[in-house]
Length: 491
Ligand SMILES: Cc1cc2nc3c(=O)[nH]c(=O)nc-3n(C[C@H](O)[C@H](O)[C@H](O)COP(=O)(O)OP(=O)(O)OC[C@H]3O[C@@H](n4cnc5c(N)ncnc54)[C@H](O)[C@@H]3O)c2cc1C
Image 1: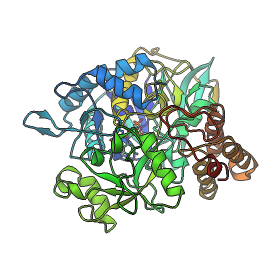
Image 2 (image 1 turned 90 degrees about the vertical axis):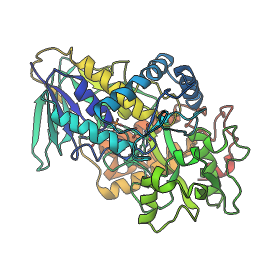
Image 3 (image 1 turned 120 degrees about the vertical axis):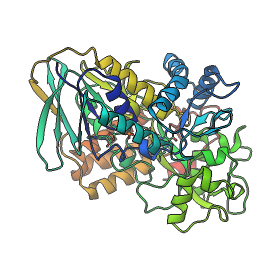
């Protein structure tokens, strides 16, 4: 029986690899042990209605509200109902989720009406989960994991994806026959200047799926996290988890005034798009934004060791001083269009996790729903791949990712992406970025340039503001505060 091939070793790829058993799996990933993934950087945790008095309906209501009701209803209901069992499954596998005398110790994040976030190691949730999953995958006899391999192309026969072309660390290209292929390659933050994403989140999997003709969905919806530490030179920018605000930290301006006062009924815990836009505008007007976590002084070391470490490495003391923050590109709601089992529109090709879009996150993802989606969708896709044909014929054609941009080309691309596809957009800025990329010799023929073009076109095609897609020159959604259009159009 031929292998199914999974590309990517974040939470989605690792969960899929386990769920595909007993089908033989070939797992290919950049980096080793899954630790170079966005999954390993996750701090806050996994959302699930496991608290006393909570229920999946309430989780769903918060998901719809954060997503500006652009969410796919069936996908949301299925995700929130699967959440408690997903957490139990991870715990049974050995993930050391934090508990207190009454059960799970729950955190609260933006957009959630109550504490609902299960976490591990305080704010070290992602790494704790990845370590346990990677250990389980390495122990699984049905999985062969090739680390430090780079996806380069797909092999196709009669319209079906039947192979993966990948390159090892020595530059050697190989084709692997595949009864089915799952892309679990994560997000696209590395295409932006200010991002919380790791360098490997460059969108290669998405670019290749689109080049092969797979349908895309909601590409214009990008989430900016409001509280990345404002250290402009850092790639990625260190994240200060929203759970800090859930525990009582406050966003302030230079004078100490609460930045979210009067902006939204949930104040500092408003959905991310709303908080990010508020900070983005304040910074554009010349102000500075600060996260005041001094009230948590006694709790930082035990409950937020990752944040405490980030600050200590930069000589900052969050127990005594406010931390400078700015929004940074964080998560892609859009991606390769998939059904409930991760099937794309191309036979033989599946996608799960951040690279995919089932519509579950709508126009703005609810905090801590993405690790949840990576677990649930990854496992569903892995299970669905068990039914792939026993054997497929050799590829007759190939679709290549193509030439990549150089690092100086990427620096220019990131500048245009930051300017045109930030928390606020307008047609003039989007068209300008498209024109600049098309006229740029280094970028126009690169796969990154082509992918950027698809994102910009998607944003142009939606003239109305919705969730995280805010058009200064369009019609605002009811919850979004009015935009100072004159300043925006002169950007
Ligand atoms: C700093 C940070 C904090 C976050 N905190 C939370 C949180 O608390 N809760 C939450 O729900 N979400 C959080 N998120 C979002 C969440 O972590 C991600 O959306 C989720 O982990 C994505 O999982 P994934 O498996 O789809 O992709 P990833 O975890 O990014 O994994 C992608 C994998 O694909 C590999 N890959 C990529 N391209 C290629 C290629 N061309 N060839 C071979 N391999 C490739 C990568 O190396 C990696 O192994 C956070 C994100 C960040 C960046």
